[in-house]
Length: 382
Image (cartoon, rainbow, N blue to C red; front, side, top):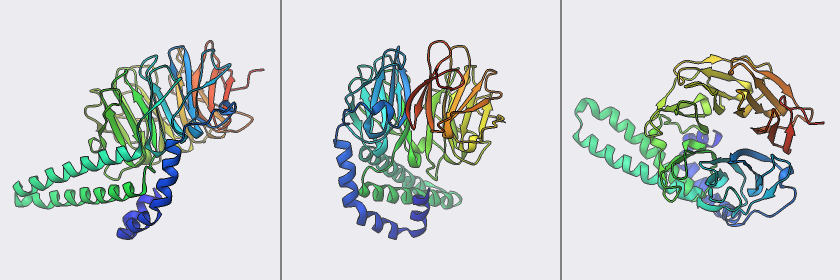
């Protein structure tokens, strides 16, 4: 949040600094947005950040626009055709064939052939313009409310208007710099309806498969624009978003409305995951802090974690095992619904970003060193 704190302190000076740096930044960012990912046999060994299933196929995304897929449980991989070369941070398939990937520079990619080819649907410039339009609409509505308000209400409304104007000014300054803010996660219900979340409170929704997007940032009680790091659906149908400074939001109506939950933690939460039981959810993140709720986030209990290293993502196997993965080669396993975890640290100590359960009890780990098939504990197969 250093950039946000500096802008809040320096005000107009920060705007001037952004404009001074705009030309080279825009050129560099435009280049990697417009440059297709280069084919390379090293993609499965390079940094990978997320993975998901597209039917029986596994699709993984990572740095330099790499998207690779496997039809044999991770034994061999094929690189997809991707129109950008930015780092990709998340991928999710709403159906066996329709998937979306998000990443740096605010890119949103779409595939309708299970990850073999991808089209660019959105960039950070597009999402910034959507957010600016939304803020301007809110400002116009607030000004009308002030004109009609009583003397007792005017003071609070004027403060709210000032916050909206400040937010609008920051967004307009960021737009001058270019598409610099990353999207960090994506979730789709089907081939039409989905959400993306990202840095500085970016939150977008589509109901037509990404042909059109709506800025949803003001739907969340996140006035400071904290980063939104993860979004998922848990058993029972609720949607959960987690983020910086312990932000937790829950929707029980398919994303139409969101409630902010009181957080058990003030640090960053990087991931959230259902346990497989109705209305149960795990939230985890910095320094291994992990929490479980059995009532849609209304109350939380800390989960013991001897590892103490930052956790990035996780998965639930068909047999109910929960695996969380993180930095320093951390692989944590629970066989009691997330009440406790047994940690294992891989010998290579390379960061693990995501995990996909395979047939039997094996795992596919994706992360700093690319891909690795391991046993149930995260140990290399002999």
